[in-house]
Length: 290
Length: 236
Ligand SMILES: Nc1ncnc2c1ncn2[C@@H]1O[C@H](COP(=O)(O)OP(=O)(O)OP(=O)(O)O)[C@@H](O)[C@H]1O
Ligand SMILES: [Mg+2]
Picture 1 (cartoon, helix red, strand yellow):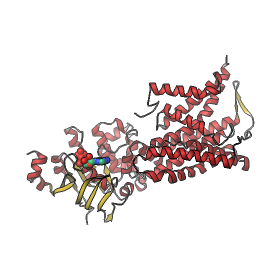
Picture 2: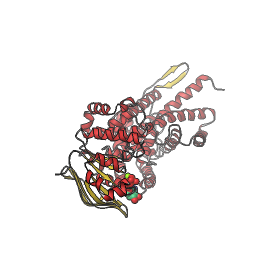
Picture 3: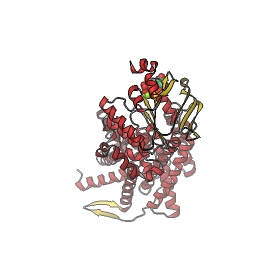
Picture 4: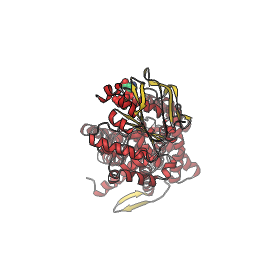
C-alpha cells in the first residue's frame, strides 16, 4: 500500500498540474460563455505559450516567471489577431458560432504543422531553474514545481479579480449573461470579444509556459490540455469560470491519484468516465447555468 | 429642433418587413407615448432606434446628428438609452453590479457614487437588495432595477419598452410613478405601452402604431377622445 506521505505528495502534484489546467480551462470556458464559440485551437495557444517560454528561457536565460510573462503578453496579442482575422468576419451571419468550430479546427491543424516545420518534432525540455527542493513532513516538492504552483495560483486570482471587479471584466460577464442588454448598456460587444480572446489566449499560454520547465514541449503538446479543458468545462459547467477553477484542481488531483493507483496510461479513461458520470447525474456541471 | 426625430423609417428582419415609412418626433422634456397592439412593431421600432436592428431606409436624427448607421454602443454614448422589456438586466450579477454597469461609459463611471446615491434615493428597495442576484428579483423589482440601471447611464432620452408587462395593477402604478420621478431629472422619455389608459395618462403626446405604420398621432387628450382609440384600445 501507499504511505500517507506518498498519497499527499501525489495530491500536491495534482494541485500543481491542476493550476495549469485551470489556466487553460478558464479561458476556454470564458470564450464559450461570452461568444458561444468552442475554440478548438485553444490547445495551440498553450503549445505556443510553452514554446515561447522555452526559447525565452533557453536563449535569453529568463527565469520561468519572466518567461511566462513574456509568453502571456505575446499570446494576448496573438489571440486578438486570431479573433480579428479568423472570427470577426463571421459575426452577424446566421449560425456563425457553428462555423467557428470548423475554423478553429482548421487553425489548430495549421498552427500545429507550422510548429512542426519551425520548431521541429523533437521534444524540448528545460533544465531545472530553481535547484533544490522543499521538504515538509516527508513531502518533497521541487522549487520549480513550487514556483509553478504559486504563479499559477497568483494568475488564477488575478483573472478572478479582473472578471469580478474591473470595468472591463464586468462587461465581459455582462456580455455572457445578456448580450442585447450589454449592447444597450453601451458596451462595445465586439471589443469585448477580442479582449476576451486575447485574455483567454494569454492564460492558456501561461498554462503551457509554466509547465515547460517541468514537462517537455512539442508541436502537439496542446492536444492533451485541450481535452482536459473540455473535461473540466463539462465538469465545472459550461461558461462558468468559477466552475473551471474548482473542476481544474479537482481533476488535476484526480488524475494524479489515478496515475499513482492505476497507471498513467489509464488516466484519460478514468477522467472521461468521471465526466460521463457527472453528465448523467448533473448535466449542467457543478456551477453550470441551465 | 427635436431631441429625436425619425423620417420615413423602414425596417424588418431578413425578408419580412415590419415597419413602413415611420415618421415621428420627440421634443426635449416630457414623455411621448407609442401605443399599439401585440405585434404592431413597437419593440422593433425601439430596437431600430437603438441600432440593434438596421434601418432599411429613412433617417433617424438625435440631438441634431444622424444615428441610423451607428452601432448600438455609439448610440448609448450619445445619450440615447433603452430599457428593453424585462429590464435588460444581467441575471447572475448582483443589483449593485447591474447598476454599476449602467454607468459603463467612462464619463459615467467616474461619477458612479453620485449616480448610485440618486438611484438609491429614488428606489430604496434597490439599496436594501443591492447584494441580491438580479435574476432572483421579483418582476416589479426587476423593472425598478432596469429603470435604475438606465438612469445610471445619465441619458438625455430613455426608451422604455412595456414597463408594465407582467406586473400586478398595484405595481404598475408604482412603476409609472417611478417613471414620472425620473422625468423630473431632465430625462426625456419615449414610452411604449400596451396599457393604453396608463400610457395616455403619463404622456403629453402619443403615436398609434398598427401593423408597422403610424396611423394616428396627437396629444393625449385628443387621442383619449378619438373614436378609433376609444373603440380599439380603451374598449369604451
Ligand atoms: N427577431 C425577429 N425575427 C423575425 N421577426 C420578428 C423578430 N422580432 C419580431 N418579429 C416580428 O415583427 C413583428 C413586430 O414585432 P414586435 O416585437 O416589434 O411587436 P410589438 O409591437 O413589440 O409587440 P408586443 O406588444 O407583443 O411586444 C411581429 O410580427 C414579430 O413576429
Ligand atoms: Mg414588444
